[in-house]
Image 1: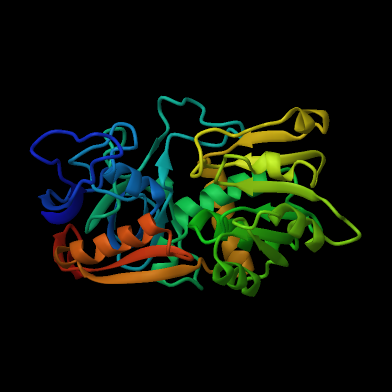
Image 2 (image 1 turned 90 degrees about the horizontal axis):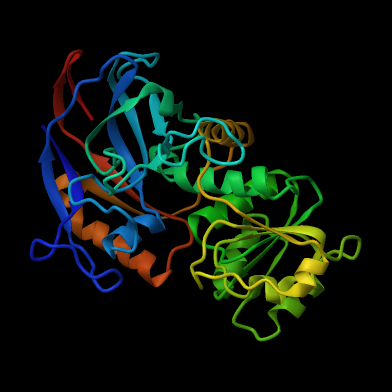
Length: 369
């Protein structure tokens, strides 16, 4: 048996979406054995994403009160019936299953499911042990700590697909605008684009976050609370290429209305989320410039492997804002603090939990985390 953290219903029934905020619940569940092609992993670190906050607010479909929370994680192989070495290899988890390689989207939308907190997929990373198909694992790049590795999967995969697969502008010298810098996906796009030698520009409501983005290689940034932020952005563009090639956006709302004059003809707006508004305004002027809007969410197993390979090749380290550490029984208060950071938008980077473990008896003997 081992411990996991789920959400707990209030008064035994689901709450009203957006009004409820489910408490965390520490539960004890059986530790399964790995079957053929599977691996038992001791979880060492996990990370939060906005979907986890939405699950606690009942703003996500098919939420579960029994499936462990969280999609991101890093661990060590405990036992296996597959290609990995027990007790030696650090691995990270592809945060979804059922999407092999189709560049257009999952081969079957009914099969593709994301880990953590829903009835759709029984796997969640906020537990001491996970059994997972060996095909869904990647070896952790050797330069990453456990905390950094846990911060990588979902944000890295989403950023990789949005930038490399969908933007059509992942080339040196291209001008890329990233909105809402500070979140995990936006920061991974920044790091991927800088490593590709793009000219990266960012938006934020925080001058501190803009400054930190510049430290990571952004050429400039603007505060979207300024009435004339689009004009300020225009003044930052290089004279040799005075337009935006692509926007990687997680906000929605009026982003195209504010930027269509700056986007090149045939430019691309990639939308991986809509935190400002569930709608994206698209004016006729953008149609006449042949600007494209492309939705992007998560990514395939093939894209996940390519992303991890690129991170290893370029020595990229995910940005981590804050870490809570402890045995899983001690983590609820610290976890609530991380969720509060996310609710308030205070973070610049990922919010991570480092799990101290216990001894467990497996087919290979007793091991300690």
